[in-house]
Length: 288
Image 1 (cartoon, rainbow, N blue to C red):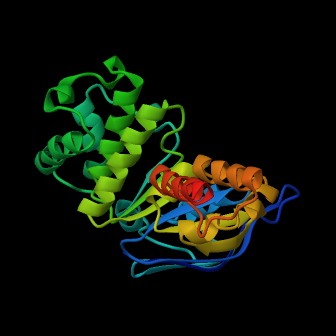
Image 2 (cartoon, one colour; image 1 turned 180 degrees about the horizontal axis):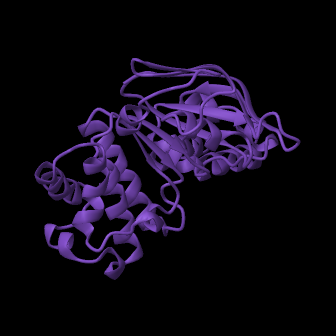
């Protein structure tokens, strides 16, 4: 499902003394099947954009098109449930939203709320609990008996059970250790490919953005600063550093290596394999 934000502006508490401009002149095209990462400093407008993707927020001005639905500023919208069924959001610490007495009931709550029968919802719960790496026997347990990592997976299964066409991930690995973070991110990437989802990732992890996303969008002070592939975005790492953003560890190592040995690699390296090859070639050239 395609999503398009066109000239979108959003003001919190508009027309009050507490009015605050959050984003302005934002145009973002997210074609179906795209994996896009949004990066930017805290307060850059990432989370505000995210909430426009399923009409949790409606633009102060501009237009948001979600599939065949158009959300236009200052127009009253009806039946937004159909949008929210197709655009699933995994917020930070989604496990905090668990509330039912069993895992199965928690996963079934979303689809049943959208009119899916109990029988079909239970079948989805069985399928989704396996997709997030857990076993069926956990369905009859209380979610509050589980570990933090298991609870997060249950919450994610609840989003997947609604069978969204678009998956929006707001810092989905917050609070996880490196191994847990990789497992969750690999899981989302596999789901993205298997279900042909459009995926939007809001993250502070430059490693995650560079490793998984087809396109990276940089936001700064409520506006879109630049957009491109990981290679295009991180090929100018000093620009990102000047904005107060981080860069992947491999890129930091490359900059330090180039500075130390007064050299310049042909391209920016985004993986350990790439930097290893470049360093090996440089050292071989020095020795010959």
